[in-house]
Amino acid sequence: MSQSQHSPPGENNKEAASRSAVLAGGVDTLITLGALVASHSAVVMADFFKTLIEFVAVLLSWMVLRRIRRGQAHAYDYGIGKLENLSSLFVSLLMLICLGIVIFNAIYNLIHPSHISGIGIWISLVAQVVYAGINGGLCFKSRRTAAAEGSPVMASQARLFLSKTIANVFILLSLVLSLSLGRFSWAHYIDPLASLVIAGSILLAATGIFTLSCRDLLDRTLEEEHQLVILRELTRYFHEYENLHDIRSRRSGSRVFIEILLEFAPDRKVGEVQEVMERMCRSLESQILNSRVTIGLAKSARGS
Image (cartoon, rainbow, N blue to C red; front, side):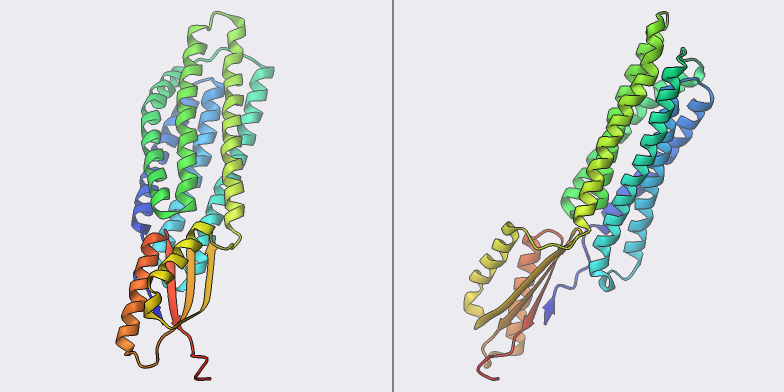
């Protein structure tokens, strides 16, 4: 039996991206807390609770990735995909909690409208500009890593940072409008209404992550395009083996597992057979993202 011996690729990249997200999120949480204490604004309060929940979510993802990298990855091939998807699912649940807090705060301020005030408003304005750039960069980095590694955790973080970037821009605009139009009584409703818009964006992001995570928690067969890759590779090496006995494939989260049973000519040397199987494994794993290929020797029907 032959199997590629390298460890799952990209774990260090995913952990590094998550570590950057944790550091940026921690600082952002402290800044929004300071803005909340020093201001009276529904949007600033909503921004703090949203940022706090998102920071906890990113911290959880980073802890999961550290556990995966430091553990014995080869002993948990099928479990790693489940662990990553459960983490993504928990991220979506945290976002739903954030949604409830933002909606409650917005409704309260619609019932009791007032003009935004406090030095925290100016702190928040500066923070929105700075973190719009930071979150945009983290979104791009997470999206690139997710595309390269097929990781549900990084995919969920990319969506999270995209929603954070949009929220930063929107909050900035709402605060500017509230300040510039403060002399009008109807402008007092801009702040809580903007909070409801933020709640809507959180709902969309949470729904998407929840759906994707639940789907990926179920093991399923490979897509047709990957099955064609396997068949094409078997055809390319057709002259190297005597018979094809079985092909088994499955997807578990972001991992792809492929098992192939081949029969070789009995007079061939073991070293030659091993070399052929190694080449096939490497070729398939290079073409199918995040795959683990195993090729086994099947017993000849003539010898039974």
